[in-house]
Length: 269
Image 1 (tube, rainbow, N blue to C red):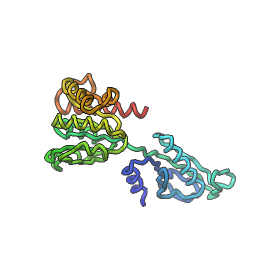
Image 2: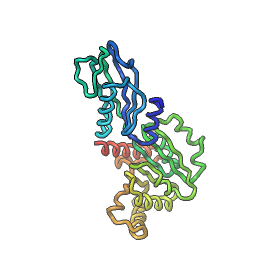
Image 3: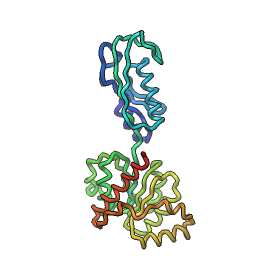
Image 4: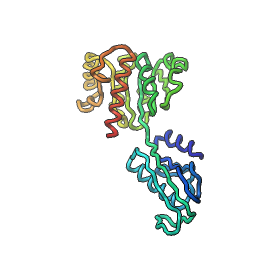
């Protein structure tokens, strides 16, 4: 497997990793500058030449993964018999610098309801490096022509057409997914809120709507859903930044996206 394929595999599996690259070589070394190695929690792909250099790089990469570090690191090696190495002698005679670049698991977001606001929100979030799930019961809002505005997305976009029970998608979402509920149907919103509260592996849950809508939902979640007050408080509503009051779909989408990015930063702090 090539290093490019290995990076893609780790991302698809939502597994952290480290990309290791030989960045400089002076004198003789097992591999030239540019050689790459991908390190995961339990596997490696590619090679930067074997021996002590590769073994130390793998050890350090696994430490980076375990500590969830995000900053790149540079390791320097002298390849001669006078150097005491952790994993044996390499006496090629040169020096090597190796760059370790963490490949963290990206954020995941699911938007339920790809109407006017949902599509504007998808356009903004698609510019972020994340896994973006777009869910709707209406096939006409998920057509290729309508979603072509996401063709240059940085995000990995996953489209889910669920004509009957959109809440079933919740169980399929990656661990730690942030959920935003903004469908065209208040009954659908209510069912999604109830199901989201019963889904343990989600991160934040956001609901679009008025105070009157939330009053009705809150009562229904308690009386019909049997959720206690602490559980119901997992749902954030209204969503978005409170000091942005515009009602245009694009304005609401900017507000919601900014609020979500702030949530990401709080998680990483």
